[in-house]
Image (cartoon, rainbow, N blue to C red; front, side, top):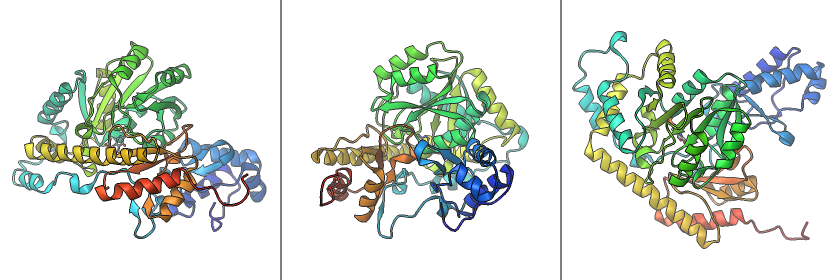
Length: 446
Ligand SMILES: Cc1ncc(COP(=O)(O)O)c(C=O)c1O
């Protein structure tokens, strides 16, 4: 914990408010350790039960996490607005930042020409009464999903994939319910699950997607929802294979008590075929975001699913945010309809594939087996994340520690390949090999 931040309060409400304010101001940074319950209780002159209640409340709201011997810590991305600088330690000056999991901006289609065309053709302003999903957008979205074998269903639009997942989980589950999530899995989803007061059950992943025995175990443990990444799984790059999809569909067939959520965020960038699970369960939703191929700032995803599931999301949106701006919807429609944009996305996908495969090959030459079947990340198992991240930082590379993405999975680092050049591959692979197999310190073996 930050030595400067003094925890205070004599009631659970005061103690939790003090911790929350420390997180908000950045005095308690993500990952900061809080004192053990008994130590803080003794410090503040209150009973351990009071401190335990304060920690419990903050855990339920996703601000803190308690993990066995690691004790209680601030979550990596707690759901309170803190200064961005407090949320991410900046890489050292001059370091190459491969820690962000973002597409290469230079490979995103330029929005300018399409924005200009929209500006020239705005038409009358859309009002509350005629807003909603644009029928033209819905039609093109359906055709694109149909071409990939996603079953027909109801359709709505959300403000990105994660917004859709939040609305789905909020509509179907209650705080305390269990959600099966991939382990390792997308850090933002783990943070969202914590912020909704849900319990994550980790499902092990291999290159073919979530493992069948892990999904079966999560169902047996009472999971009420399962979130599966179709392709370009973050952080491992896994893609659900035809055989895995078949086995998972057989396991899930006809289940009425489980909400199945599929996240196809890589969409047009994936370069591996889609093998959807959609429709295997009575309650299902399939999300396709435009963030990765067309730009994260578009904040738009298409959600299809069974009638009840989509009606819940659409109905909840209507009484809250209302709708996703039709200006954005028209922009996405324009991008989807432009063959030149298609070509740019195709080239971006090819270029990510080359960089990823190039790094995997360079690592294999060092005897390292890393993962990255699709997408923009490579997942490299290491014996010790902290020393690997530090060793890499010392040689000028910033990568993400696997702890951000793991529940019980083995340690690893995530390397985002989107900005790599061909010249980077050999030195980066050498640095990663050194970080993954550190030279033991001189002296007596322990
Ligand atoms: C697994 C996964 N899903 C979805 C997204 C994109 O989500 P959104 O549409 O909310 O931008 C990402 C982005 O990193 C991701 O890694």
